[in-house]
Length: 308
Ligand SMILES: O=C(O)c1cc(=O)[nH]c(=O)n1[C@@H]1O[C@H](COP(=O)(O)O)[C@@H](O)[C@H]1O
Image (tube, rainbow, N blue to C red):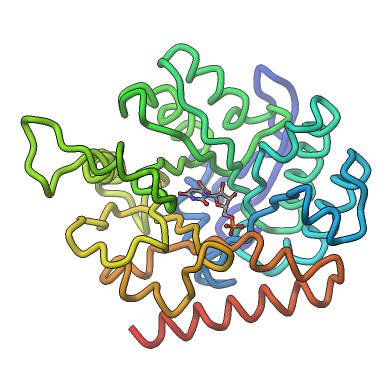
């Protein structure tokens, strides 16, 4: 860690784990502050760890736990010391049952150890009391899957996420709330308008408004981010100024490019964490090639930020 804090051994009801402690001793440094610093130091690129069966095959690996382990270890070794964020997609690990989840645990630990922030992409969402258990699984210090942030679905109502918001505040972790997703099917839910709202205040916009409230007054930015697809075209009708990060999947395999980012995100561009998964991963298993691809995306993103 930098001058702002240290990682120390800490104890929670779940056991011993690493915790981020502010130098002034006031508790864990919030995710938003840690992410801002990582984005400023390393650039904002987030690379996904998405071990698709087809990628395992392309890498010459078996579609089994050993292949999964090798794939994840290679991505972490190649990229955890250079990108701001790594985002393991839990589904590809869960596919292998408990042994896959064990690989996920090790990957998260190794990535954080090497200096990347880890956003666990598990897209959890449930009624509040169950949401508390999901939050404990991913955001409770000392939990085996403890991550810097978690993707969550607000489509049981934003308020159902409250236990996760509270635990994230306590543990210095963050959330990325699905607001306007990169897939075309998302519109039927996210573009819906409640009778009491206007067309400009659809469900996705309502989620952004909740996040703006959550992050109010936080500096340099709050810890409660939105997922907003880079594939969505002009988003100027939305107020993306949530004072928090915008995770932007869709660059690479889904067709968006770094050059699209200024047009899509406008004034919110500097809050954007663009995610690339297959676009980088397809260059493996060679570590140099993975790094070259990630560096190229990072340079293109930097150029897009500078051009705006
Ligand atoms: O939350 C996400 O990360 C996510 C949200 C979204 O709207 N769209 C989306 O593609 N994702 C994830 O981002 C990654 C995109 O992967 P690539 O299309 O291979 O770059 C996958 O892990 C998706 O699950």
